[in-house]
Image (cartoon, rainbow, N blue to C red; front, side, top):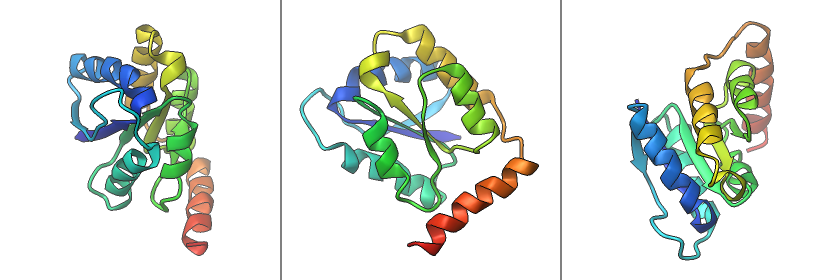
Length: 150
């Protein structure tokens, strides 16, 4: 499985940390940019990852911006995306277990100097399966909202 990852300039430093963690975990990534701290518009990068998920070209993706919120809002405009803004490992697990999140959104500015927290978030998110059951019904309700309002 190859995971597309992207960030804006404010998430670039955290993305570099995330890329190293993913390499250490032997996760194959597709780095869609940005590749520097030069100012860019986060929606352009969020769209790249969200489209890959929405079109079925990837199962999971990762987005990072300063707060994580901008990329999360952008990605969730796509009907096949369930992007989740996460700042800790427990929330990361719950977004997979209960919401079947398929894009992990991270707040770069608050986590860029927290490699252990990032590692725990990534491991938790990648290793936690969707529980299904009663949660499947709820995820389907979310999906029906985005498909009926497009």
